[in-house]
Length: 298
Image (cartoon, helix red, strand yellow):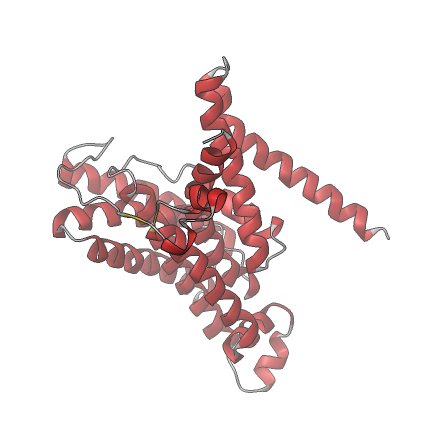
């Protein structure tokens, strides 16, 4: 295979946790609540997913508990911001810091380490082969041999689109952002839809976070490594639409895949290549802001 094919294959894997997190953040964003706690929710899912998969020896149980714990963290943030009227930015930052601290504390308590957790005999994520793609030369190389997480993220993206744009729940949730008074006049509670949006964000981030650890079979402190923050950029770069999310996540996946490829192929310092995805994120934010201001002039 030529170089672009494995690069695309790697990018699709890398974009998966970004896509899960961005999907969760999309629901809170469309409900009028900017959720900056995606980073902490991903990290919680990564830690809990690995630990409970190790304890149970069962991947579905580990993933389920990861989703539930991340949802609990999101529910706590939702209760603080919606019920107690706490500042959403402060509670988001507090959630991220809490996730960072609690995962390290629990790792030290139960595994006697503040660093790498690498349980022995961890169940491995199986890769899937799609017979329908086997005879299509390029697509087979790019889309085959991924874990079920990849295909599940695409399916969940379609479900998210249907939920947001083809159901009454999605219509009411989107109305929380710009037509809150209309919802109240109908006897509906915007706070209910916003709280559900937080739960959905926790669910998606819990699944996406579990992929980070289960895909390699280890947990590393702060292994979310800014992916929750990049997911926020994906949401706005994708124009807050499910289809746009997929394209934006792929772009960032390609940027990180290229940085990994550059480490082995070019004589570039490792610190610089590891920083490429974040440099690219900063560039995209600045360019996107400039383009938006330019378009508003006309």
